[in-house]
Figure 1: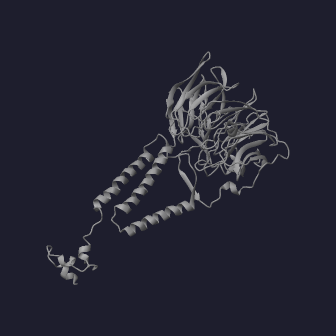
Figure 2: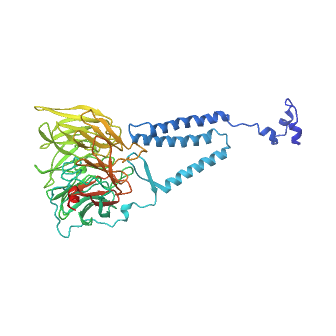
Figure 3: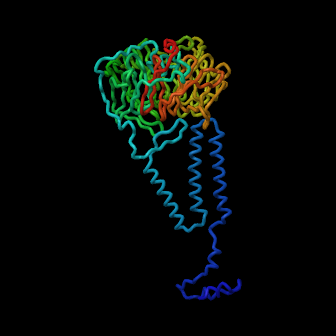
Length: 566
């Protein structure tokens, strides 16, 4: 049949002769008719189904990246969700609204699925930043601790001195568990007097810090299937002794290994592993003295990100205090005899947090203060009776220690957008109360414990170094390091040394900053590490002991006394 003859026919031609063809005959339609066929919807409507959602998602991404300031982790999750929604919308648009041949649509969908499967097979998630930025590595890439030699149980060849001397750093956050170092004046000019590296050693995974006393610096680390307590020579970093437990805590966001810091007291070392095993060792040799699986003993389950409680040791009476687990009938706080390991009491039914207990005197009574998941409480040392408690805002995780302030007050801070509180503890006979003095949104710590000098508190407010006025309702005095700006230290740690701050940044560097309400003034910077560092620094005898989940180092910091002698 001649195609030109058909296309030249008038529009009102009678096409009955086509339909009258014998059954099974397939008519031939010329190109001039075929080009008039259209997709399921018009292109204008199809583009609207693509552009409008993308504009909304683009606005959401811009809002959470540059405007929203309540919590960086929330902003990160919201931005990631918006990116994923964008990919799904584009994929859905290609499949359902473009009018492509179904064979082409299935081909595109298949390619997309293959890409996703390939990425899932090639990469695995390897932790996250404090702002919940996800980190991926090749799936076949071994974890760094897998390449380290095994240490297992190894006693010291000769006993080492673990006597606590003036200036030592024998437990989490220092002698008073407040992140404040006394008795040393650091040289302020790191250009003229830079820190000197004393030693550097590879270490196993984990977020434990160093406890330093006598001749040793002790930390916890993960090597393969063993969770270890390791004593290192203070001057060389070489292993003196080690004690291992067959346990490995792994969590995709927080990473592997122990989280808590050992405590050195009375010649002994007390350490709590990420799975809840509490060990007491001879500090001079590493010989085990007693051990308890605290969660198993209490019938409690572990926390999502592992046990992070650094044991509190009380000298009189000789007790060791740890938090427990999920807040069931087994209790939220447990106290053991520091000499024998006998459990003395448990108390509370609140779910534990990632903070550690501290000893404080409030309203004339010595007591154990503990930040739990939703309750902050004071416990009687003798029997665990709850003296007072305060219902605090819920949060995915609370890890910051509450500084004890003059006038029977506590400064409560946490991350994830939780409001900070200045808490006043009062007592009238046997009646205890805990009341809010003020609240603030300017000190949203996550892993950091704020430090206090005079009536000012300094800390990392959702990653930005911040000073607030405690006598002015927590008013922000200054702040540096909002997202995507210079001098952002992330979710690191802070020590106060007289009128100076040692800031251990999440990215690994250590920064020296003035602790002054007059404004931010950086005095020096030390590139200690080049990878994520959540571990607390320890300063003992003018030496700075730092580590992360892969390596440890010791630096000699110039002091005013040493410089003046030269």
